[in-house]
Length: 313
Picture 1: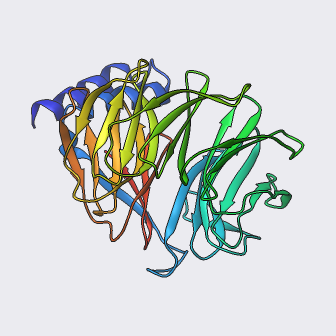
Picture 2: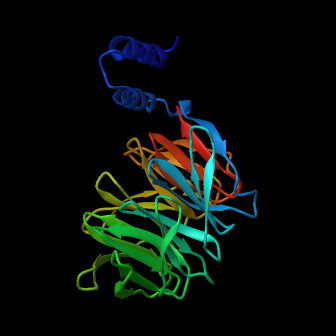
Picture 3: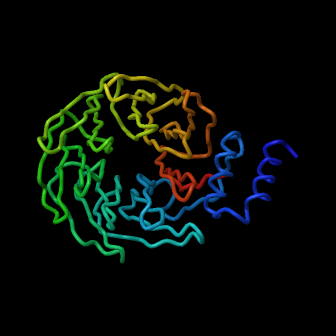
């Protein structure tokens, strides 16, 4: 028995009767991260179809994984048995997802250009209209919804579905994130912008990527961006790039944080896990297209143009 396996056995035998099971699983996961080679694909989910019906976006809503697809539908998955509920209403592919309070929100591709708000029973409660391009990005800022579009705008919506403000950007907006209470956008002009939504003014512009910005996340208090230039950059609050991660062979299309590690998904069909030093500690292979990411119940979920994969230890 190797040292790691012995350590896990010791931990389990000594505390399994005294510690909440969820906490025990978290402790074991942290120990397992000492050996990323133990990460495996535990399950695959495939019902949107193959190739034609790629998974464009994933999120977690009411403790279930939700996927949005080229087939114009959303699917709500029960990870325990692989069953799903299908939500229909979009007239083009679904390209973005978010959770807004107790509602699920989805953004449609060009030709649809709508934002749909879904109830817990799976019905579409409201359709938000106003964008004239694909709704590539959604983010929740306090009780407001922010949407980024191919029409080169960011719109801020209230809970009643009214557009309160429109922010102009020089190119298509492909990513949104909330960082320290402020909205951040990434667009095809290669720039990341920090916004004061109340005034509609841009507070800071982060420059350094040589291609469009496709993904944003927050990791260890810092802003992280993924770009068409195949790199991942880490930024501090001053706007300085403190780290650039190289390793992908194509555009970085998705970012997530999993048990302290930064996770990046790319059009090169790979998922990479990065430690705090910026070193790639594991590459997860097996995807057949560009990757989208979300974390659910301590596991990493990645979607591509065939299926979703659930990764764990």
